[in-house]
Length: 331
Image 1: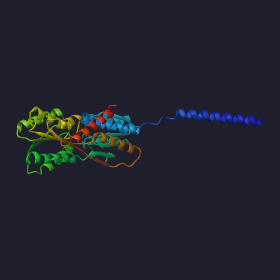
Image 2: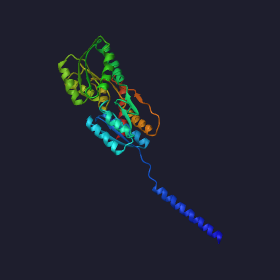
Image 3: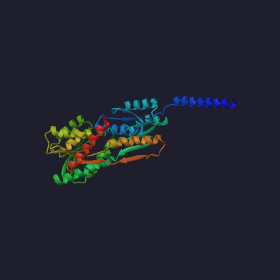
Image 4: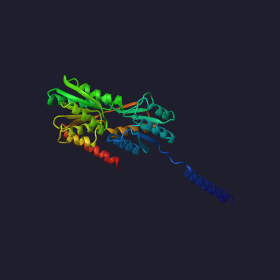
């Protein structure tokens, strides 16, 4: 009887432990997914590809990504940052609108324990755990080398050039690209820079470049500092009927610019582009690494890619890669 009683008591204790264990497993909280806010400031293909890259990296890392666009408005950028602070995100990945003005809200985020990663542009001070960018001066420089060769071989070493920039939007980045181009091309004694305007969206650039062409009928080349300006410059040359007289060099890439670089009109000669998908991937990867307590580089510089009419196979290969990335992001 005593042995039977001990067995019964043992079984009862085992059953109680099993029930308690099951109850504990049911009550254990689910593992919380880290939340990362990804903020862009413009709606164009460059930033769309950045968002696709961010999403790809977030999916692979198993983190939740919240995407937003500040629409190039400082007050909206501040509002977004404050909203994400209130929502308790773990990291903010952002291309800030201003090195100074954007710093206050991002410093507030950092003070709340939120990891900040900047890409494309950054803020003053040590707020970001990491900053990812392309070599902005090299983007202009690489295109400048092709333009200089074009001037030497096609124009006898002489050219009148106009430039479109985005200085009133992001002065430091715009100047770096412009200076990279001008420093290379300006070494030719026969080169003259006759006009410079700010125009970073296609509709702005069509008008500004059109006005430049009207005021300077003997112009040979237009160079633009970004995608929208390059698109608008090509369209302005077409609208003016200047195919065969004026060519365009530029910065950044899109499916439309790839088509321009392969078209028979010969207007767009070369662009040097950042790699936005990879930029988005790297930014989120750095944020995830920082959240996991890993050491991250304070600054990561990514190489640009030259796309030139003189290498049509290279243009086609780049265009195919872009289509694949866009398809991946649209899944």
